[in-house]
Image (cartoon, rainbow, N blue to C red):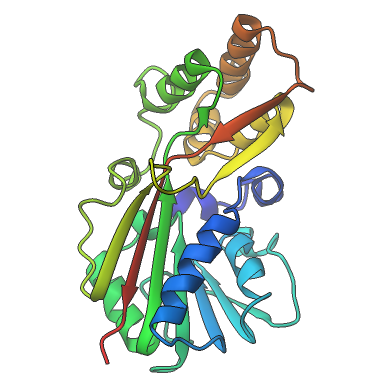
Length: 268
């Protein structure tokens, strides 16, 4: 994904302010993996970015490999003794031996890949009965401020705002990966939160933190590159929200990100 690979992209900002996946995400992934009698030796996180998921996997697996096409992102990646990072496209896992991986994850990245090629590599590197887990999220929602949620969705979608500044692939994510065929066994798809299952991504953050998170959007970076010297489009939106809801930078808000989780098993 070209924007995140750009040397001018602020990967440190991304690492500091991007929302993370909560315990519910890892519980669902590990539960599925355990039911398939999966081992906890080796995990691979594809499109690892700054290593958010890889860092969590490192607490459970003996060895973790984080793979990303962007050296810029990996420069800010979380460092742990049992994590090894590799610069490579998601469709090229050649650094990983055949049938050597217990769990392969891809978080907020699968929509950028050529999926037939990607899944060919996934099935090659996973052990028989190994687990594949893909997660993606769309526009953040405020739990208590529906008008604010609409402002954020409009910011991301409207052509006169950031709607035309996303790279190809964003529509696949906004459709919650429904158009992606997963050529594996035991495929399970979850759209969360729902009436039965809790959110995989929910946080309490200050409005200042939230403002910085929105500035990690790739569309914002692309917009700024073409509108140098103009008023900040994110600041304008956040300031409008705070004025409408009587919020200040230090006020804490509850946010949720609608999420899709896909789990599957590699055929023996």
